[in-house]
Length: 172
Ligand code: ADP
Image (cartoon, rainbow, N blue to C red):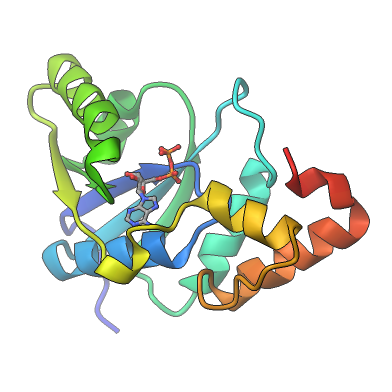
């Protein structure tokens, strides 16, 4: 396989706690536009997550282990600093509904202010994923519902493990 080193990459940042089929859909769409996608897993000490940063990174790396053009890394601090260091000129975000728009616009404009050379691209997922969020997946799973169609198999497995070791962990 040809090396993808040196080719344009877009950063797709998020919490991915856990990654869902909605995120997967956005990554697939982004990969049609950019030779490389760097999935940037936010490490935010202020935000309690079900999965540790290491777990979230390991899961996404495993999912894309046969696709070297999808890279995965943890990041903390300013997204504009991370993209600058990684040489990315574009950030991808997913828009599900009007309710996402206000926050996303605010973030995009702030990032534009911090780095005018960085562009944010919004992508719509397939309509069947517009209702999907990581928090809803955790809630449904904790209540005994099936998330089989909503997340990659490795995520379903991880949720089972977490729930088995600590049933309370999913209800926060
Ligand atoms: P954050 O905490 O940064 O919002 P998320 O992991 O929840 O992190 O989301 C990362 C990005 O993916 C955001 O742009 C979010 O709008 C988008 N996203 C989340 N779920 C979906 C989905 N089902 N379809 C499309 N985009 C999504």
